Amino acid sequence: MERKIVLITGATAGFGRAMAIKFAEHNYNVIITGRRKERLDELEELIKNTYEVNVLSLCFDVRKRAEVKDTLDAIPHAWKRIDILINNAGLAVGLSTIQEGDIDDWETMIDTNIKGLLYISRAIMPGMVERNSGHIINIGSVAGKEAYLKGNIYCATKFAVDALTKSMRIDLLPHNIKVSSICPGLAETEFSLVRFKGDAERAKVPYQNIDALMAEDIADTAYFVASRPPHVCISDVIITPTGQANAHDIFKKV
Ligand code: NDP
Ligand code: 8X3
Image 1: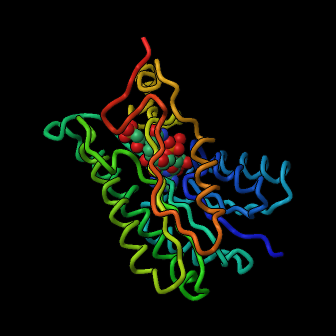
Image 2: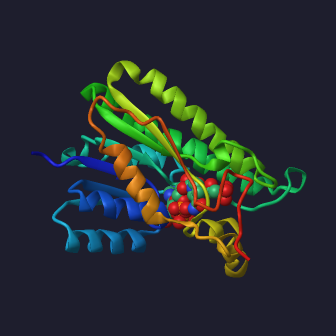
C-alpha cells in the first residue's frame, strides 16, 4: 500500500520534531517545515537513517504569505497528496499585562499562530477537497480555552485556533475531511525559552516542581488522533500534566 503523507509545520523543535519522528516510526512519509535549516537537515538525516520512509524538508517562515504559497505550490508531484496536515508552528512572545504589552510581540504571535496557520491551510485544503479525503490537526492550547494573567494576546491567538478548528470542521464537512485540535497544557519544549526571549533561567521556572508534559506525549496523542478508523473524528483533546487542572490551576510540589 502507498505510504501516507503527513505535513508538520514547526518540526525543528518540541512537539513538531517529536511528531515527525512518531509518524515516521509508523511508516508515514513526512514533510517537515521550519525556519532553521540546519535543524531540518539534522532531523531529515535522523529519520532517513532510522526509518524506511521518505522525508521532504521545506525551510520557510509561515508568516510570509507569498513564501508559503510559492513553497507549497512547488512541492514535487509525488508529495502533493498530503493526507494529514498538522498546524503546529507557533509561539508565545513575552508575558506581560495587556496595558504594558509590546506591540511587536503581539504582531509576531498573531502573524504566526493565526495568519501562518491560515496561509498553510489555504494552500493545502483544496487538494484535500479535490481528493475528498484528508485530516487537519491544529495545535491549540489550554490558553485557547481560558485566558490567564498576562497571557492576553497569546490566549487570543489560541482562542482563534479553537474557532478556526470549529469553522474548518463545518466548512469541510461535505468533503470528508476530518478536523481535530489538540490543546496541551504545560509542556517542556523550547516554548518558554522563546517566550522569554532566550532567558534560560526564566524559561526554567514554569517547569520547576511539576512533571510537565514532554513533546513525546503530544506526539503520541497526535498519532492516536490520526490513526482512528475512517468513520471516527476526534474533535478536540485537552491534555495536561497530572499536576495541572486547567490554564490557571497548577499544583507545584514543594
Ligand atoms: P517550540 O518552541 O519547541 O517549537 C516551535 C516550533 O514552531 C519550532 O519548530 C519553530 O521553528 C516553529 N515556528 C515558530 N515560528 C515559526 C515561523 N514564523 N515560521 C515557521 N515555523 C515557526 O514550541 P512547542 O513545540 O512547545 O510549540 C508547538 C506548538 O504547541 C505551538 O503552536 C505552541 O503554541 C503550542 N503549545 C505549546 C505548549 C507548551 O507548553 N510547550 C502548550 C500548548 C500549546 P523555527 O524556529 O525553526 O522556525
Ligand atoms: C502553552 C501553554 O499555559 O503556557 O500554550 O500558555 S501555556
